[in-house]
Image (cartoon, rainbow, N blue to C red; front, side, top):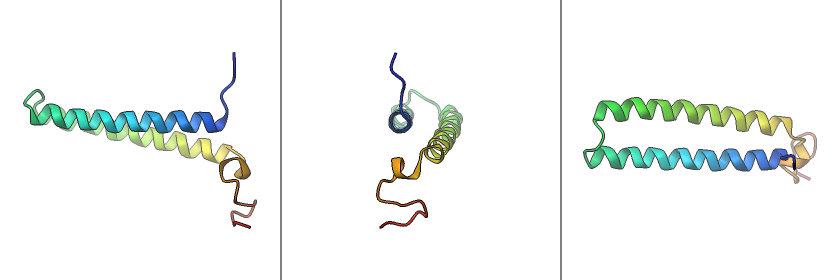
Length: 82
């Protein structure tokens, strides 16, 4: 079984975030078409916002765990290019 690299994990988190944005679009369409009451959409949107914050937190933690040259190859250890 292959292990996932930090870059792979970041890519998967980006994909998950994109899927979350798609879900938010689908919720808005469902509301506009009358399949979802406004109150339900508000509750679900609050949940998607919370999940978005979790995904961003995971991405931030993953980036910090990576070596600076792995995440940003043009940056030296001081964080400056050169």
